[in-house]
Amino acid sequence: MLDTEGFVSETNATNLFMVRYDNSQCCYEHNGLESTGEGDCSGAVLLTPTADHCLPGITRETVLILAKELEIKYEVRRVSLSEFYSADEVFTTGTMGELTPVTKIDGRVIGSGKKGVVTEKLQQAYKRSIDTRLDWSTEIPPFC
Image (tube, rainbow, N blue to C red; front, side):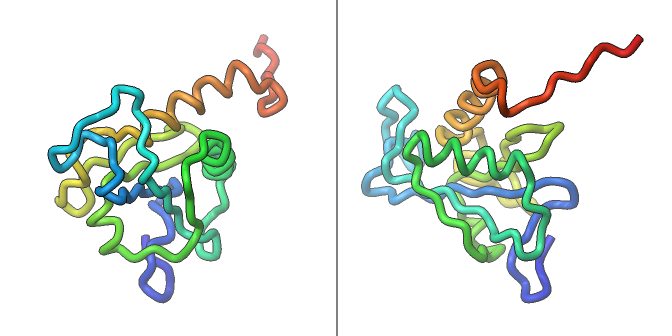
């Protein structure tokens, strides 16, 4: 969905992120470049639209915290649809879907058409945080 000025704001039920690589430094298996095997790409920049025209989701905020901890550069700013079309990776965030890779937008293949390294790294960190950051969750009592 676009905001009132034509910038991407969110999907109908989730927040959006994209990853852009500086291909001169990229270790990602994309455009013929070799992976380091560690799933690291120091040239990656994570972008997400400002929360001016979308719900500032809890999962969205969690991803920003995890990105900072993992030393993944990120920007929160207005992002155009053409930037999403030309992204190396895109994923959505939401309570039910957690971090979900996006491989196509409007029929256009994103990056390699597969889940990217940064998406995978953030998914793993998010899943670990469920078990290790007990202060981030509230246990729901059993329903009798």
